[in-house]
Length: 151
Image (cartoon, rainbow, N blue to C red; front, side, top):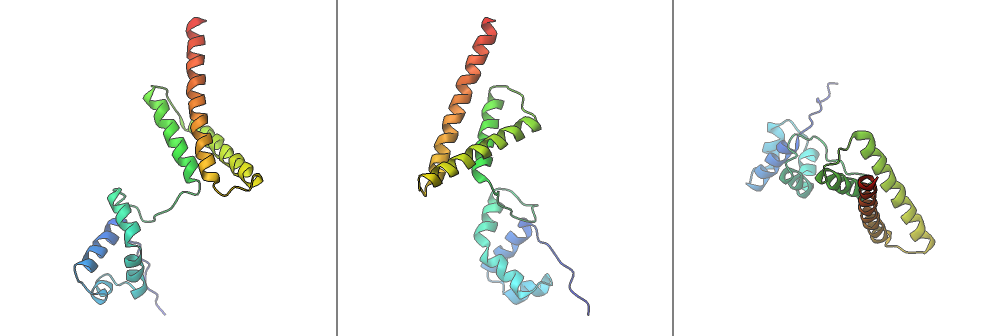
């Protein structure tokens, strides 16, 4: 028995399919034209909000929309990277990876601390700790630069 060859749509193609469905084309027309199953078109329609958001973020050629496992760590690392680059400090891959690991460890400790205190809103505590750490790093860097200028 011959099976259908798998066709993976890009975000751009999925957005075009959603636009056609919104304009009134029937599901039958679309899955006959692209040789898709009914469930594929239905899944695209069901996930239209996510697909439109990815389309708006200009992720047109992406095939899959993966979510980060450690979103808070990713955001903190990106902010740290932007801060360092705005100050002209060169950042390489291993340094960024080390900083991300530090942020991850910090988040794990914050989660453990909140569990010990029986608090459910550990994300808020984590973000406060990360902000404190960023301010601390900036102050420490200024102190180091001042010491280098004196010495």
